[in-house]
Image (cartoon, rainbow, N blue to C red; front, side, top):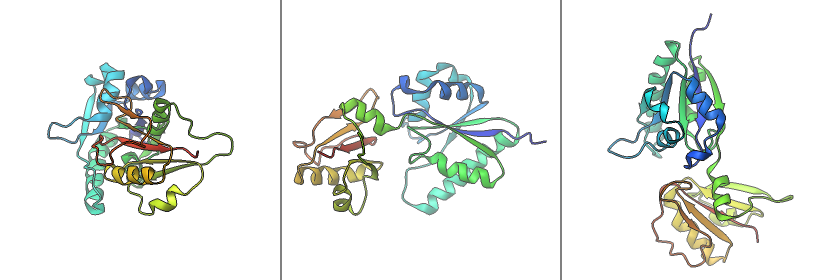
Length: 233
């Protein structure tokens, strides 16, 4: 008989606690332990704070603070994921269910994807609870449609190397994940006179909404959680 716990990946949406789904709240409530990325050095554990604002009682749960830095160093990233899974695995082996909190949706650029793979390889059961993706919330904030009729929707990292080819695609283009690439995208948008808007820290207290990038200085500093939506027209 398998007495191991289950690892749940729970998307908590982009920032507004009111966008945390009912299913996410039920899953968090049912789990014994809450795991989340804690950047340390006094910086905010964003996913945890969003979930706690939606469900203050979560503060009483057992917590796993995971040290997983945002890095392009694949070796370091794998080492951090292994250490995180080891901590989570201790709880799962003791029969406790663990929910890992993730910004946005767990299937889009989420650390949960790496942890899920490692957990499955270790013989643990995993389940995913969808969250509101940041680009959907950003489109709502901008008053834009992402796709109508037979339009295509393209999602890119802001650090996309072949930027000209990406911008030439038909349909709506979203550039997210990679704040270092935002100035380059803004510059290209202005040069090509494209219909683009930007949202930073969507749904958070320090949210910034720029309806048009036509007059925006590409060197302006936006928050880490920034994305650009470029319309087809």
